[in-house]
Length: 276
Image 1 (tube, rainbow, N blue to C red):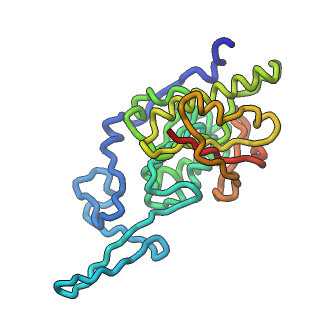
Image 2: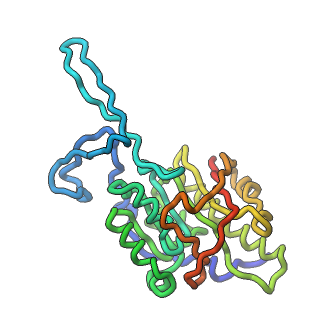
Image 3: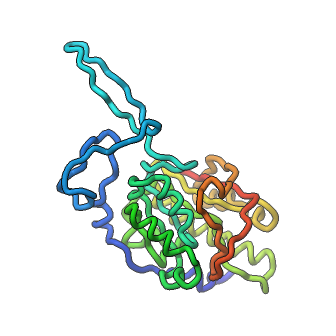
């Protein structure tokens, strides 16, 4: 069918190098202290990770030999729908970063395992999305990482991402562009190519039990993309498809992309979960 349009050509820059990323510790739910030698520590001394009552189960274990009680804390993490603060999460194709900011707010101080990326530059986001910088600020103060000009179709080779394995990779409402002068069949081909190239890259980046999530409209033109078939080209299987409701993610705005600050109607849509 030919070469993909220029908007699908890789444009990759910046971010921390992979050595820096791999030094970032992942939170251990059974650890009560923070490593004082860890440069990512938010304090200069050990401290207790406080957990609310509704976030933890306290199990009292009585020692048989001395009748002393030890409190063992089994922390379930913080959840918002399908996503936990224990997951290492990569988000791609973010518009104004409102979805990733919604996750980060839900995770609170445990959002450092989240990497949010956009295909656009920071200047583009500032010019086109009124809320972009405030959402980026919300991510930053919670120690989430933000990366710009990350192409979802080549991300597996990016020097700052290629050596990381993610538990969840999320692409909400992928869209390759507007091709109104082309036939319906050709338009669908371009959109399916975007999804295919994303899945090919994401498959290389998920952990053994990791999942790739695509939220996608399920009516009319979008139904013809047939995501399950595209995923099968790469040896991926559908785990489940669940109804998507943007209200489950407070503050999320479904931006149209390619400039303009308008939202689009994402109803009806589903989140398709794929795995190896």
